[in-house]
Structures are given as structure tokens and as C-alpha cells.
Length: 339
Image (cartoon, rainbow, N blue to C red; front, top):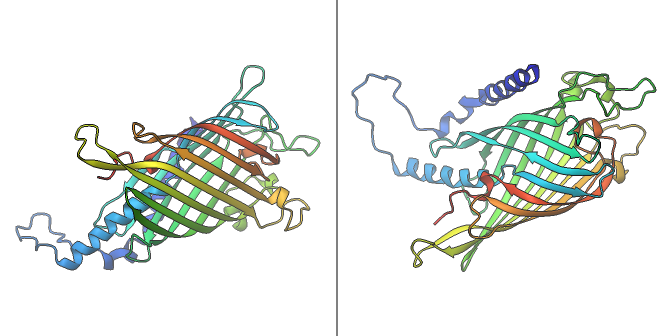
């Protein structure tokens, strides 16, 4: 119960903090009559206002494609065998309107692994509530440029000692907590070819943990866990036109295939590893998604990757290559295909 209250407080605190720069966007929004009981007629939108709102709407669709997916399946070749691996990322889109030039989503991500051991234990899932604010820096949704700012809390909900008496990491009942902020710059490119819509997005950002100012982390993680990270992402999405099942003369677009490449490189001190020790500092993954026409927001998933520092909370010391198979779902897969 304490963890639930803490996670709820983090989400609402994040939402309040990210919404503070409201006035920065005031110049982009149409004037609003604050008199609730005024009988004054509202002037019709000008051509400039309408064009701005159309642009905002197109960018909101771009932002939606950046949202994390929820996935469940199996991973292979990990040091500890699993029965099920799931990364659940429900997205609560709080601001998505053509009237505003930004898009805000809160999420309550939970990463869990069901280990193949006596009793099939889950072993301290990663709880990662947070929020992300997106805002555009240009007006061309075929060549979008935009920035995202995120806050994330990461803990395993356990209060035991992080270290064993001999100084090793307590992976059975050890406490793991950190908080971090991420700032990312995104670019994109869209091409319409015959019955295909092809979009590509590139992203590069920096992840800074509250440890840097002495706050919001479990002290024994110092010089062991990566608190400064460089993150990158390359997303290639193909949507295809299919015949409408109700009206065969009509075509609707829906996601078909997607390639998602991500990497993270730890830049600060961890143990005595050199700054170019790729085996301990680099996390990298390539995932492929495939959707049949009857799958609205679900896809098949296959992928390969390497973890120099495992992202699964207190198990961060593990380094290994892996393969994954499963299913994925989310708003990012266009639940309502574009006609």
C-alpha cells in the first residue's frame, strides 16, 4: 500500500512539474474569454489559427508514435532462466488537442520477470511511473523536429539492505531506488509511396539521475550504477493501405511493420571500468514488429539485444546477450487507422 501511494504521488508530482511552463506556450494559443457568463460571441477562427491547429493535430499523431509499447513473451540466453517476461507501459494521454502545441502523457510502467525457479517467483518487479512532455520546434509534419522532456521514478518496492554483509549486491531482498530526467531531440521523415506510408524517426538524448544533486537514490548504488546516460533511438515504421472490411471500395491505412533500434551508453563512473568498456556500459536492442490487418493495436514481436548493465532494478550487475519473442500492444500502433 505504501508503494502504491508513493507511485501515485510521483505521477501527480511529475504532472504538476511538467505543466509549469504553461506561459511559455501562451503565444501559440488563441485568446480565450475568461468571463464564464459573458454573452459575447466568440469570433470565428482565422486562417492562421486553423492552420496552426491542423499542424498541431498532425504533430500529435507523430508524438503518439513515440509512445512506449507494452510487451509480453519470453527472453532467451539470460543468466537466469525465465518463464515469462513482460514490460507493461500503459500510457495515459492527458493533453492531446489541436488547440495546444504540446502533448503530455503519464505512464505507470511495470517491468517484470517470472523466473524459472522453485515457486516461479517474480522477484521484485521494476516500478517506473513517470511522465513525458512533447513539443514541436517546426511546422512540417513530413519532416518533424521536436523535443521531449521526461521524468521517471524507478524502484523495486523492497526495503531490505542493498548490500549483503560481504559487500555484494543483495538480489534477493535488496532495495533499489533512483529518479531521473531525460531530455531528447527528435527528427523524422515521412514518405507516401503508392499504398504505403513510411516514417522514420531519429532521437538522441541525455538521461540525468537525481543522484547528481544527492537526491532520490539508494546510496549503495554510488559508483556502481549508471547515473549519466546517452540514449539513442531509430524507429522505422511502415503503414499499408488495406481494403475496408465493410466497404471493399474504400482503403484504410494501418501499421504493418516496424523496426525499433535503441541504445544506451553509461558515461559516468561505474566500478573501475574504463569509459570505453563497451561490455559493461552499452545496452543495445533491435526489435521487429509485424501486424496483420485484423490486428488493430497488437503486433508480433521478435528481437535481439545486449545488456551491459541490466535495466531490471537490483539485477543491474548482469551483462549478457539475449533474444526475445512475444506480443506487443499500445497506442503507438494506431488503434484507429487513418483513412
